[in-house]
Length: 142
Image (spheres, rainbow, N blue to C red):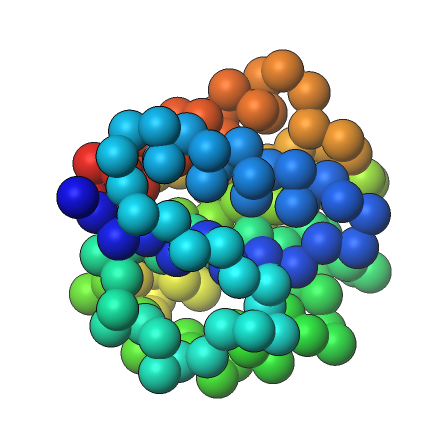
């Protein structure tokens, strides 16, 4: 059984909805899932999991949330080399550029992205939720 962590920040509930959909699917496939808000997760937890999913919406000029998520990310990102990770989040404007930048950074850090990032425009619609379920499947398969 895979042990999976899903770490997210959500201001409006959209990214939280995505996190819950990912967690529900991973659990249904037999994974042991721990769900964390970004302020409750630290680098000391990284080695406890076979795979980790990180979720954050686009903020400001297409950046990660700067008050809680970005500090958590900055604290762990240099420990992600070789780790199986996934990225997800929602956005309300723009083109999803924040996710492309975030994905590139994760790859440059040596993280292994187990699936394409999942993004949802505003509240996740059926397409985004199905992508979240696929991400949950991928996490459980690690």
